[in-house]
Image 1 (cartoon, one colour):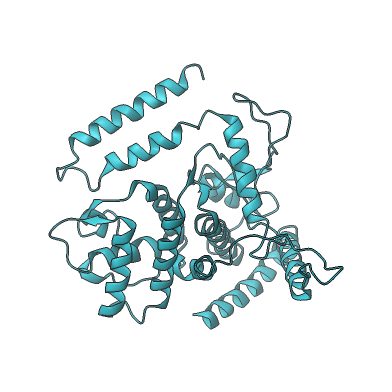
Image 2 (image 1 turned 45 degrees about the vertical axis):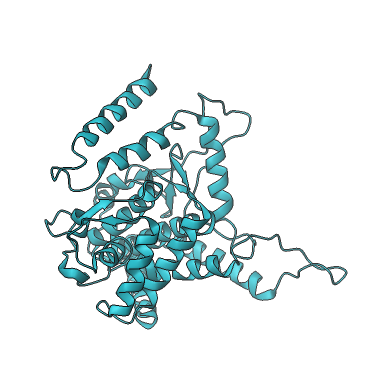
Length: 366
């Protein structure tokens, strides 16, 4: 659209000014000035398609290699830019056949799939798993991630896979932030209980290290409650007497005095996944799911290295277990896509069996 860039940036500037006016009052539930300042910073490249193509390739490289640098199947389908057909104002990329997540419910109804059916429940778990894996790896391993996740940018493809589009907004966070975030994930995952004072102190200190600031009258458990609210949707009761509901007057969000601008979009990603898990009624803990990646990040094993076959004893060998892992991932994806092509009655029965097996595996891991 003509002049859309200047109009959009003007709107953001006006929102910043409005939020700044109410920054020190109780009129807004949190510091929206920080949110709009980060949004303004990210929108600077929203209309530069050369930058977007580079971002697509960077994220693709991250999610199509495992921790050993070997090829792996991405949990999400990412469109690739067509080299030679990209300029600052034109972006040509792969076309993804499917519908946005915002229209998935009506598409399922059109196909006669009930929201309570095994197919729908299995898809819900697959959606959460795919988004969790991609954002966890990008945020914690490289710090470079898709910063505009919403139901219009997440696609349900015709073959049942999940797609992600629109890489105009991306975010790069620094190594120190990635390290502290990783420590938060492990502290949450390894805590003895939701009320253990030592655990709450450790989690709270890490939250403060990230740059979270709470109101002066917030209880001592406040920082830990914010971390648990953001990254552990499975928690039943938040410490400090806080409510889990984002819009509740007693939400930990209302106790935030300031949130680090550099992590605003990390929070946006976690809130999206948490919101989806609530909508699907599937308890989901990002800290639990991200803990293995966090552990690798802290151990310094996330540097991707190319594996080559040793011919003279000096190269690193491709291990058979890595080959088997790759084949297992590939076959799992083939089976998942094959289920979507089955006739409806048979598809329901197969999905019911797969759902039972998945719930049994989740119960063992809990």
